[in-house]
Image (tube, rainbow, N blue to C red; front, side, top):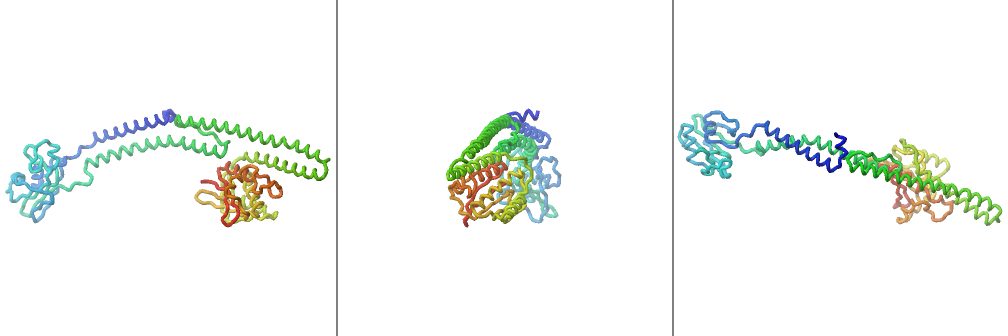
Length: 440
């Protein structure tokens, strides 16, 4: 049944949840209403006051409790209270004493007799000739040991019926929390998995397929994403294979050209052979670029150890590569592809900037790898163009000043395949920095 519920549309899932929550809350409210005793009446009759002064306990627990105390002086009215000789006389009669030995003060009622539809006498509702004091009241009777005084306690900030309503609300809310949590979890988990699959697809067209689970809308979106991924992968494979095939097939006519030019005069032969060698280098770089788009299996890669190894190998052949701040950092990836990425950045820094300074820092879940040089940098409007295929820092095609302009293109493709970003930044003090950021 739960599986069938999850396959419903979000509209029906939400509607069913609201109906279930409404029925559950109403059931809890009815249960509490029937099981709990009703609150006591919030008033005192004149007879209740007389019994309390005479020392008789409340017979009806629903009646408002009166507090009793003994004091030496007669009780005085509080601000807003008044007295009525008729009520005082009735109270003295019930107590069997004279009105002079009795005090009675009360706050007049402003509710027009509610909940009783009787008349008001001096602001006090009357029922069957007996005053009903809904507001605060103080009464006292003179005794041999002083004055015996009773009074209604001050109204609490939260009354009994308010506490009961609050209790109903809290119990209903707590009962609905597991239901709401289960619904939110069942609804958000497929969406989260779908978002993760979309992120993986953005970094790697060959990423695992999106799960087709959850509500009807999420299943449909997953199917569309998987179909798009299949079409995209087929398109990329077709274009990559075509580029590789063209680059490979060009080797044969180039070999024939090189063979036939051997009989040409020396000045012409040297120029044509130079062009042939440049075309061979471009073909080799293109094939390498195509191969570089396909990374191998992922495994934990220690970037700090990778940087130290590259710097050591470069130092052995006399290239100006040095290490700066290197912190331990391990990421999942293809070791060979990552080494190729860093090596391309180092080659560019040494070729165009005179040296390469490597640093590696980890902060707030982000791994930052930087390769800095001491070159002139590049114009701000040309920074992004440097990642385009066959785009070089040196606009000439002289092979002595570098490759053919695929190093940064390959480096960015590998970085994106590992969920990283690669950017170029001009330093204020001079030079260019290639910044590789893994994580957020």
